Length: 401
Ligand code: ARG
Image 1: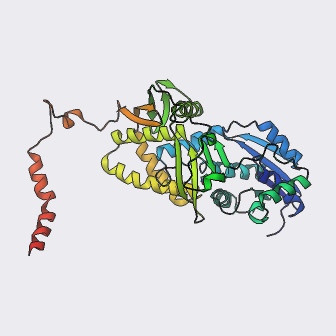
Image 2: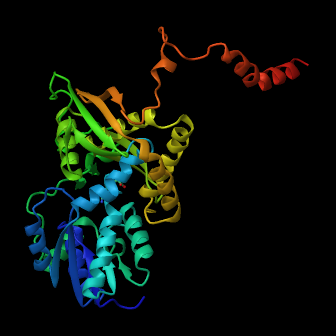
Image 3: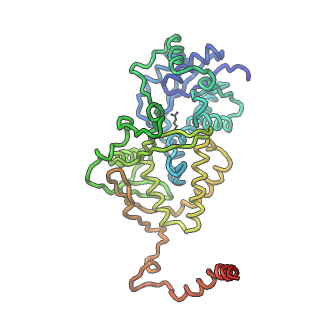
């Protein structure tokens, strides 16, 4: 691979990505490093991050607000897909990566760069998501991954940065590795690496403990249109405000914590803690509305494809052909997912207490009822069961010989 002249680096302000700047220039001969820090609703102050990149040697430091596309183009499709990796993790980090990669590529085009770069290590999932996405969108761009190759320990990385004039982290660095955006927070490493150790309360930031949650339950009504959440308690909200509100609400009742052993793309198991209050609440409610509005066979097929969708997104294949095809199926199903779901939040749980759809409910009361007014033809069951049970009776008879 020939040398890159100008690289656009995905920048977080942390030690690794900061050290990437002088490293790319000094060790790999990159002439110009332009950084890009994405605002994904993580609530960080971005101006200090922007300045830190310049102080670390970036020739240009770009900060971009991606919150709105993050929610509408990435989070909402995940809600429509009820996407839960390994049945649990709603992909809060995974969903952000193809968007950041897409923006890196756009910026590379705008500034005439011949490379993009990121500070991911070689054993995480994020490197896979970045590299695959960049390769799909811009095969001509070089992808530079210093942290995957420099082989420095954390101390060595900090020392390298100090030699290049990058201030070391002021406070004693937290033992945890944290990723944060508007959809949630992931916490790894430090004492959590022992899967048998209970997570200390101090690691949580978006959710209260069950002990601290209010004794009074709270019911929230979530409105959906074509599978997208559009209102809370009857108030129409734009997508970003709706997610924020759902996070606050669910988090304040201690809902949305996960502690799981997860299977990474690179073949290892890792222990992950997540706080995903709003997203998990919305997915639960969405599943519930689908149970009312989707036909049984569509629902069953969709449940299988949802797992596939979650795997694809987790594994970095957002822009791949199977994801594209499954998206087509999911979109088609969502036209009838209109209605409201009432969820009761209480002491760490979110339980459905009601669902309704004025336009698309497939629940037919006079078919379902046991009261007077029952329209179901009970006698028709006999012929149905005769045919339905025929193969079983024939097989059982053959076994008896
Ligand atoms: N295990 C989660 C995932 O793969 C979270 C990864 C967090 N990333 C990070 N660089 N800390 O989606």
